[in-house]
Amino acid sequence: MESYNSHRDTWAAQETLAEQLIPRIGRLYRDHGVVTSIHGQRLINLSATGVIAVHERAAHLGHEQLRLEETARVLDALLAVAPRPASVDVARLAKALRAEDAAAEDVLGELLADLPARGADGTDVVLYGFGRIGRLLARILIAHAGNGRGLRLRAIVVRRGSDNDLIKRASLLQRDSVHGPFEGSVTVDAEADVLIANGTRVQVIYSDDPASVDYTVYGIQDAIVVDNTGRWRDEEGLSRHLQSAGVSRVLLTAPGKGALKNIVHGINHDTITATDRILSAASCTTNAITPVLKAIDNAFGVERGHVETVHSFTNDQNLIDNFHKGDRRGRSAVLNMVITETGAATAVAKALPKLAGRLTGSSIRVPTPDVSLAILNLTLASPATKEGVNDYLRRTSMHSDLRQQIDYVESPEVVSTDFVGSHRAGIVDGLATIADGVNLVLYVWYDNEYGYSCQVIRVLEEMAGTHPVVVPPRTEVRRELTGV
Image (cartoon, rainbow, N blue to C red; front, side, top):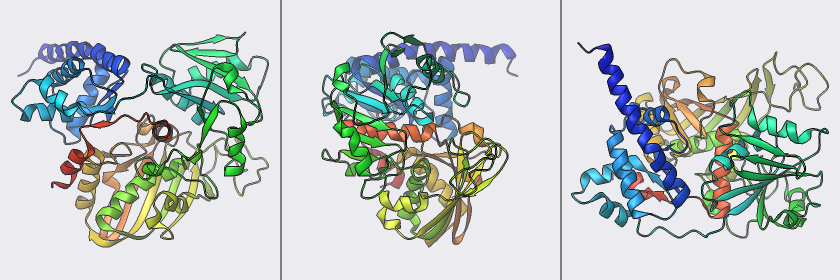
């Protein structure tokens, strides 16, 4: 019978190995721009227990067991090869090494030989608006700052709210009731209107006119402005940003109106061109459901469907009953479920034109601060079983081109708060799936704040040309999904 001490000794040994991996992960990221992950779960900035948890979670999802010793071998080989910037799946590289009777450096050197070069300079980013999404984008950009050759957060633009506005902005960045404390330090240079977060110097600019800011005064050039205010949603309004010196492109974190491209990363990000000056990252719900809809349509065909979202309340609603120009939204958000409209179902067609006219949608706002649930009630072209659909979506979440967007879970105990901080656009709840011939009901959780913000960052990386090349290549990943 195993003793108490044997379990403790095993865990201590695992912690020691994990602690030794952390500086290697950091060196690869800071010195080479290499983002390491295990089946989509990033290793950067994790604690020793976090590194162990990522390894164990991969095994629970049905992947081959990846030992910490194998991860160490891959990381050491990567450091020896000194590759160009890339997004590296350590587990898949470990699998490649198992299959080869050769030195790890030789195998990985061959795999990484043709990676494209990235310029020495990064791309400046300005956050116009610093609300829920703006502050999460700031956290992610600061955490991903690396060696400065990717996205560089240079400034935020807000309206001055009080005499101690800068102190309050810093506090809101540092403390969050939903997402917890900022990992690191935030200090204030009041004389220069600057926030300094983990070594990233962020200029705070006070303005209420997107066309009146001269960003070049602050050394900002060819910046991408991320408009988080939602005040302007069409090309005419958002083009005002382009009148400011130092701005080259604009990204809206809300559904765009008119002819604006609505980009859902993983679906239509390949339509972004250098001539696109203004883009939209669509909505949180559109980002959550479109990848799942595409996956289901690819395998079974979607004839028609209805999308019902159970959505956390937002700042657009009132805390207590008061006048609101929108129907029902004037009633207390913390006391009521509120039926309201959603444009997500029709917005899907902007990213996935094949489904145009096939979906309807509505929404119920509920008294929770974050994490929402989309219920997809679909009529399929081909019949399906619960087991078949779930197995397909589980493999899609692990091996497909959509593995950054789709996650999968099977647990009778998960609830909404378990998905706070998820970096995937949507998480399929496999135990809730209902399949009866051509009738399919899927339940998709999504962190409508953080998961969406991660999607926005991916679109930003595509616009800037800094989205890491995926290694191993996606063709090999696709082979694992299809078996061919």
